[in-house]
Amino acid sequence: MSSNPLLAPLTLGALELNNRIVMAPMTRNRASAEGVPTDLMVQHYADRAQAGLIVAEGTWPSAAGQAYSRQPGITTPEQIAGWKKVTTAVHKQGGKIILQVMHSGRIGSHKIKPSGVETVAPSAIAARGKIYTDQHGMQPFDTPRELTTAEVKSVIEEYRQAALNALEAGFDGVEFHGTSGYLPMQFLCCETNQRSDEYGGTVEKRARFAAKCIEAMVSVLGSGRVGLRINPGNSFNDAHDEDSAGSHIELLRQIKSLNLAYLHIMRSPLPEIDAFKLAREHFSGPLILNDNFDPEIAGQALRGNMGQAVSFARHFIANPDLVNRITKSLPLAAFDRKTLYTPGIKGYNDYEKAI
Picture 1 (tube, one colour):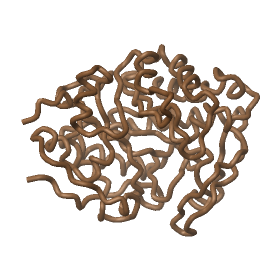
Picture 2: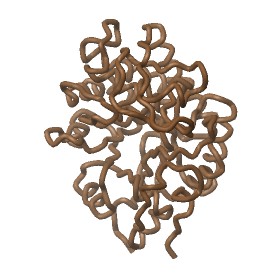
Picture 3: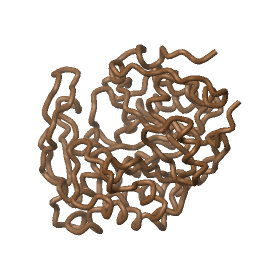
Picture 4: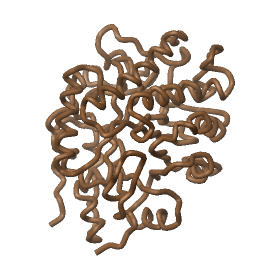
């Protein structure tokens, strides 16, 4: 039997976890074309309910925020009902599950979104690169329309409503997606934010959008059920900032008084940024560490007080019984990269549990 500290219970705000093994949010593109969670997703999450906490995949708070084909939303009654099936199944297995709320901003294509829905962003600057669409194959990212100041405030309201909808769907809380080049990071980064209003210009103003969205979510759920995910130095989806560490420090300063349940911090891709150290110095609450951890290294990180929990993505794909495998020191199965985003059961619900 394992003596790994990952197996110890943990309190994150209002969340009481059976262990410190977190299932990281992973876009898997198994929702319906209308963004409704499917029975495949119900089984997928229920199979992994041994995790101390499941962070469900990035989910759009409005149709404009959809990035990918078959990505779930949390706006319509049908989507809320679909997620309710997921949360009920997880809770029946004794698990905890929260929803990651993700607005993609300029990352996406009008050929994915419903007819007439625009792609919007802090500034009218298209991201370099392409995105896959079910109907038209690879397409360049849209050139977004710049949000007006009034519209920015409306998007903040969309986050508040998404938190309310998540509560209705039975989630134990929400996580604010603040990285990977999506809308909050587009506001934070100086290259993608060329605004001159209260949400652009200085780093204080660029960080304001994310801070106000988080504040709106806290206003309806309470601070103990809201977390934040960041990744200083991340340039995914053409996100670039002249001082990424400084921008993220400012964001953490602005949300300090909210006393969030946790900070989900990803290892920085830039060698000059120690994201875990940055998080410990500028966030006083619990940390969930992420990126390239195996169970042994994760246990060492917790013993060294680097954080309070560790999230796993790829290990949870091929190992629905990851907690059991860690508990019994069993070998881990490898996942099939080719089936990460394809529709259907293959590479999603066909991985076997250890005997």
